[in-house]
Length: 196
Image (cartoon, rainbow, N blue to C red; front, side, top):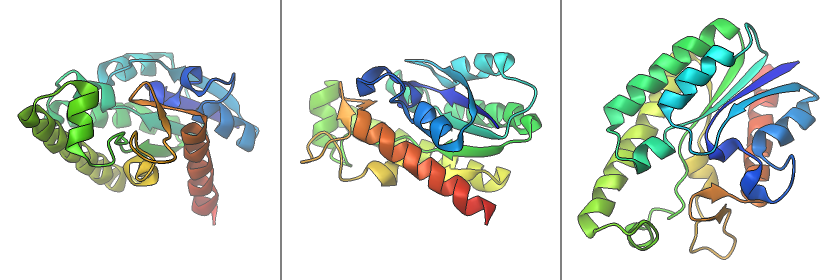
């Protein structure tokens, strides 16, 4: 089985503190799959589009985590979603089961946390929330239209934000080992359920 991981730091080992602790590495072990890891820290949707050129001609599973860094650098939702659509067009010829992921929210929906941690004005935090909601809504629609599995990381991580008793984040926006493990487990459950 070949598994291709595309995306940003949601999918890398670095912030888990454990070699092989990232969600793709954990999922590959659960699936006993060959991992083609094309994820990168700080990756944007433009970067993922470029990474597709290095993808193998076929795969059994693909995970896509992208869009969060685009939001942080101020990209508009329509631009992000247009690039995500182009990425999904590039993924489809691989013939894989694809898991598209929403962007998680380290603030658990609290704009004051976003203001404090990202040094945003009140209006800046409100605008980021609007763009965040638009991108996640677009990812949900895109997954449904393409017939992809949807991992709603926004929902999965809710209650584990920076201000919670059990945060799944380090360095404000990066998943810790508990967060990466929850993602890998969720992906595995989605794949298992889709086989039934």
